[in-house]
Length: 209
Image (cartoon, rainbow, N blue to C red; front, side, top):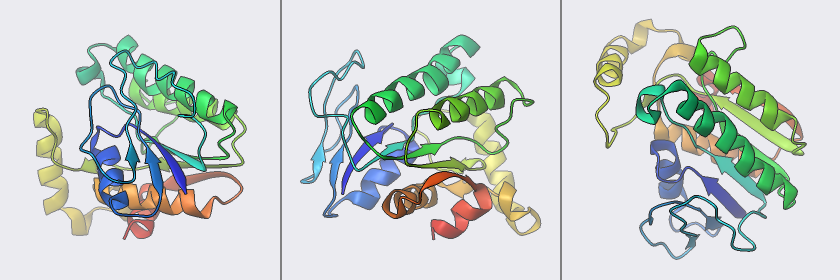
C-alpha cells in the first residue's frame, strides 16, 4: 500500500513509523522537521507546513495522528487551529487527490456536550466525516501511554495511577499504548471497511494487540 502519514513526529505517528519500518508499504510522511531515514519512507519537508510538492496527497489510505493539547499549543484558539482546522485542511487535500480511506485519531469522550477539548475533537470528527471518504475509521483512545519528549507532569502522574489501578479500571478507560493505537490504525487502513466506523478505546486495545 501507499500510506500517507500525518503527525509522524508525535507519539502515535512515531509508533506507526516503527510498525512500518521494513514493511513493503510505501510511506509518505510530510513533516516540518526531518525524520530518521528509512528505505520505504518519503519525508517531504516544509517548515511552513504547506507541502505543495505534487504527488504527496494521493495514497491508498491516509493515517492522521495529528494532535496537541491546549497547554502545548498555548491557547484554546491555537489548539483548535491544530486539532480541527489543520486536521481538516490536510484530510481535505488527501480526499481531493483521490485517497479513498482515512483513519483519524480522536479522543475518548469526544462530544458536542463535552469540555472545549472534547468539543473540538467532536467537531473535527464531524467535519472529516463529511469529506466523503469511502472508508473512515475514527479512533477514540483513552489516555495514551507513552514517554513524551516534552514535560507533562499531570499526564505522567495520571499514567502512573492508571497503570497501578489497571485491573480495576473498565477496559474503555484504561491507558492505551501508542503502539497499540498505531497497530489499530494500520489494521483499519488495510481492511478499508466501507462506511464510517467509531473505534472506542477498548476495541483499540483488542485490535492493536
